Length: 152
Picture 1 (cartoon, rainbow, N blue to C red):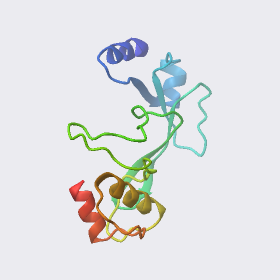
Picture 2: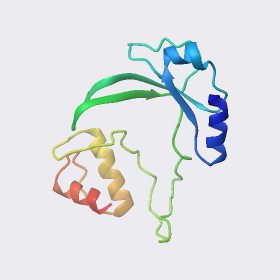
Picture 3: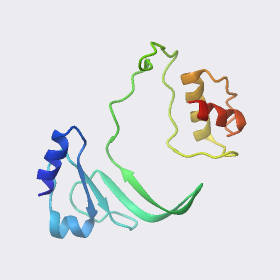
């Protein structure tokens, strides 16, 4: 049944997958055909599911800076994004081409004023590459970095 559902979703142009607990995969679902994504939820120090899986949700109560409630956290073992970006992307409909090598992107997806560190540096490098905002790469989220993000 899950494979049939995944085929319908894939035919509609989306990336299908199945999310369930280890118990459900073991006792009710069984295997999922490739290339459909299998996302196993098991809140423990290791995933004890014996079959192949692409994502492991290891907690639903992780503390994340900037988020006041409990947060689900996962390990992804395959690239779930779009095709890799080219080294010289062209902005859609503008004809603008960007100079230099595409910078490393931050893996963090949330920032607030006063945040510091390497992930902030990656954000600042990307913003300068994309929009030539003239940010000083100081690894600190200040008013100029916030303005650049808002402009982006």
